[in-house]
Image (cartoon, rainbow, N blue to C red; front, top):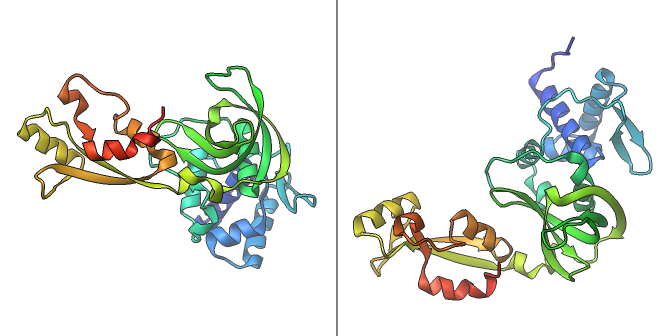
Length: 281
């Protein structure tokens, strides 16, 4: 018979399982920070969990935290990556999860075994040697990366990381990791070194000028544009330069449609000139 927990206990047990499942290491600090509770309260929550599920977790002195045993059988059903990141954003202390950048869109399931190492490296600020495949290199090959942010582009999850092979910051699609990894020590290049991540751009959109005024007005309403002193409907969207291409793809501005009804919006001519240096597909 499944135990019946009160709301607070259920929330804490769910969070606890998500951390163990995705990060591989649970400490009282996780619970303290997320729920804004005392250390003793956080410790008690872990002990309460162990009372109900004594064979699920064990303390590992080498990592100074609890980890899942081979008998770990989550009592909560929602342990997918989307739920994990949603819960992170519900934290009482949002500064604990600054390395997550999330757009609110549906997420396809990702196998935890393939990305646990990457997530652990991200949280522990470590370099990691991973197996990765790409369109240009379809066979899995070793890459040493220093991850600093998870990004959902509306379709797929990526990890933003410094790549030692390319000597630059790149985006790596999570589904292309093979789950093999080795930690390589502390990161040498972090988020502060990622110039494109810290460069803010203004993306100015407006209705396709080929549309009739009536249709342009509808498109302006759809995209929450306002009429400018020059008489044109426009909207400005701020985005990190590192995420520009994803935004353009979401807005369907990564290609040009022959019919204005299909195109609907364009980048303003002035904006297009500004963004060209960052629009390398």
